[in-house]
Image (cartoon, rainbow, N blue to C red; front, side, top):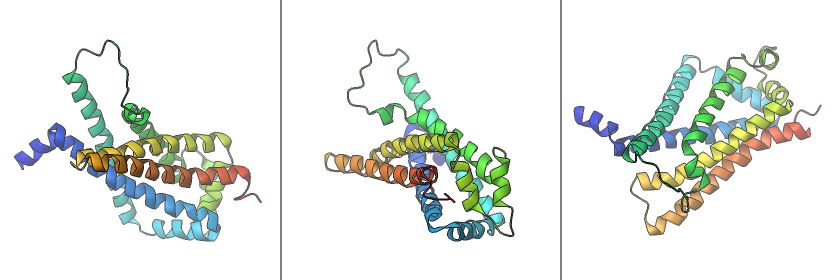
Length: 227
């Protein structure tokens, strides 16, 4: 147990913890997106999906707690690695020219913290009703959950829709770099796999971005909930 704890506290252990938590969080992001895309199938499909999740009762809160723990571990690991890297190079570069690093890699920690803040806002908005009481009231106006009406009402507000799309852009950049870094963390980053990992990361990031922003765009354009 002591050796395991020491291993997790090491740089390699921290990277491994960040990678594993990232993979699990990515699985949730994709599953959550697929569930939310039922917005295009009409209110019955999305409301029924939301009600089934709500009916999980205590298991739902266990899942939420688990996801929040993964998120804290992921962001905490990134911050810890950043501190370690800065401590290893106390004197900064005189002239820093990031020839080989991408914008996503240079802003990895910043985008992660912003996404974490968005997740908290998202929960306050759609789960707890602390941000938009009117939307929350719409969801609980009938006998069952009316999530479709709540989502449409929220995304009809341009500032909400645009902030959501911006957060998804940052999340997609984060995913694009994270998937590629995963191969390196697991020791799979060879000359043969490096290009494939980069393409896979960009592809997954693009799918997550397009899938998620399609919903606020459709609402703003009046294609969903226009009546």
